[in-house]
Length: 78
Ligand SMILES: [Zn+2]
Image (cartoon, rainbow, N blue to C red; front, side, top):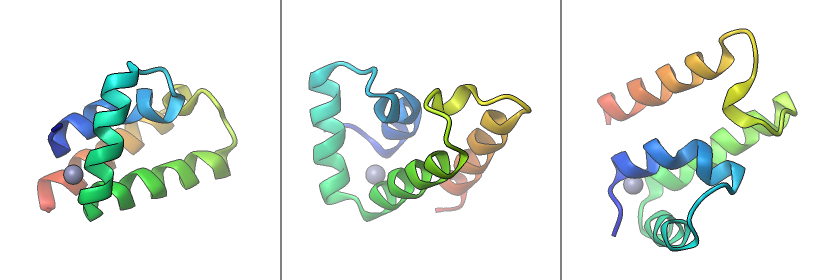
């Protein structure tokens, strides 16, 4: 079972689907049991979809850093 922290670490790869299948399965399983992470993945995916950049966290203009910062703050608070 992966931890919430691991999900955060792998979030970019997970959304990019550039991830080991075993790890992906483990994250999927985590998301089924963890409302916090499933909301996080869902909202991040929507945010990236709105931006419309398939490169996810490589968006120019410091966007990726801001996202990462927010996610880090989110995890620090919860
Ligand atoms: Zn979690």
